[in-house]
Length: 363
Image (cartoon, rainbow, N blue to C red; front, side, top):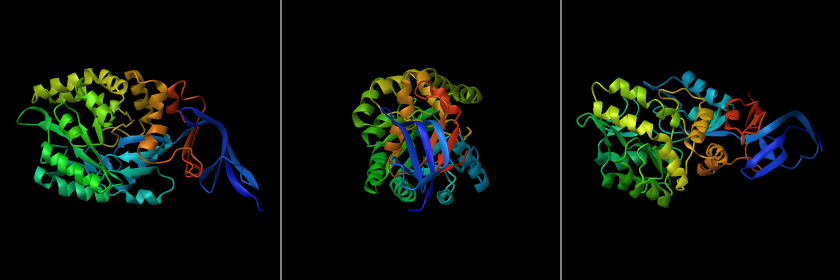
């Protein structure tokens, strides 16, 4: 048999929270735990190895003003890649980023289509802005365009009220979520405040983004229904600055945003303790830069989530939740190598030694 060039990865391969192997091989871009016959080592990489990290809430092709040119979207994706983030759930974007799927040097993306918001109740140029009667039709449209997810804007500031309020009547949300599920898509929603959450969860929603409005009476409902949250704590850190900027015009809203910020860690810890699934997301691509997954994992630990579980929220558990493989036999070789054990100190995630995407050492 003729020799084949392979990549040999050795050290401590963190296949799962409780499964560690000593080495793996990459052949034709895929993982094998059996040394291929006739193989020669093209290159050896060693260290502590994790599956490619997951950012379960980001926006490729978007900035604070709306859609961006392809070269800017490319830089966003490259920034994530070089930080070791190799699987992205794009939680809403007006840009068509399907061209990224043809690039083996860019992260894999799970798209949620374009945001669906209430008329004049979201950031300009981001979303389809519609009224409740059209919600089912737009959810069906984005379910067909996305990769198994649809993104609603569940609440936003109501200028007449001067504070955050729910965007969708319960009946409209229930019908829209049922339609998405019929089409095989899951539904998530941006929610800062409290008053949209019960209706959305009881309507069958699958995930809530940010979830700063979670309260003691709502957390058991989330746990019972298995509704996940993606807290985006690096984004919630901006609430005081946002409140300061809007206080003169909307003092009630500003005070509300400060309260949500002040209790953010308690909220996340209480949800985790109750059994609510928690995943890592940064909200990069709006006003925040890409490449912040390590900072978000550290924030989850600060909130009181055990380091191993915070690590899982961007690796093993996150990939399983999104239906994508980790370091399993035959899976695409998307992995990150570190000098030290990230289970002992999650800050290690901020300094990858090597990034391997589709079996190629690219950073």
